[in-house]
Image (cartoon, rainbow, N blue to C red; front, side):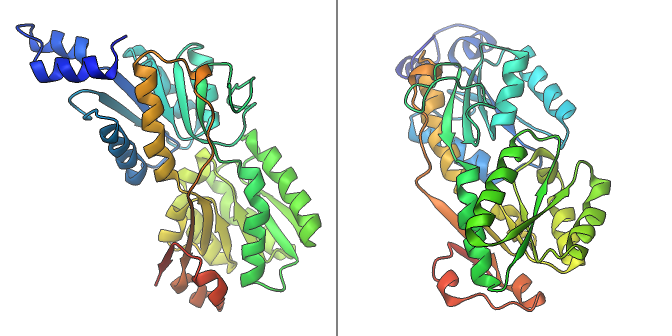
Length: 324
């Protein structure tokens, strides 16, 4: 496989007198870029920026085939199958569930996970320093951040005693997230109520049921289905009149109250360096799993006002983005 310098040199030289299509096949490797559900331009643009930082030019010295799921596992499998059929052997993905699906359909494709929550789920049998497989990337440790999210909610809602953790029972990662929520709840003296949403039809009835059971706020983890229902979820939480904490700032931009998470655009930018190494012949097993270095706290003051909440100054001064 050509290294980066060879790719750049061939592109600059025009590959002599080879026909254009042959030049492209020889000089331009293809990377599969897979999002969870609704397209997030900031993720894709950050990845392209990262490639440019590494000396490659998207569309010229590297081609990116982008696919996004439709909120269903079948839709994601079809997207992956299409990329594999077109010859893609290096992927960058938004989560370990996607990585697992790529492995199911192609055991030897190289995969960089920009937001890795579960090593086991992604098929990583080794350690952070030596993944020992065909998956590497950036560990966001979603379960470990739950306690921090609860603390932020308690600052906004000092009387918080009952938190609704919304899960998709078909998402295998959510069992771990729920267990971590219960552990953090014991420490912070917060009771956990569970709302299960496996389809769009479950959304508002389950949120209302949880509210009527005494829930005072919602917490939404990442999920294929939830990503595909961003506007509907924000509207449903507003309809039942409770604040919600999200894993993604996109929900807050749409009217959700608050999110706290590793900066995923930054992780996709950093993922580009690993993709370039893989295109040059490196093995995922030799690329250590890194941790996020940048976190984002996003708050929507308009939503807070609508809920009758005052955001403490201690939170506002820490916020990376305040939507007014």
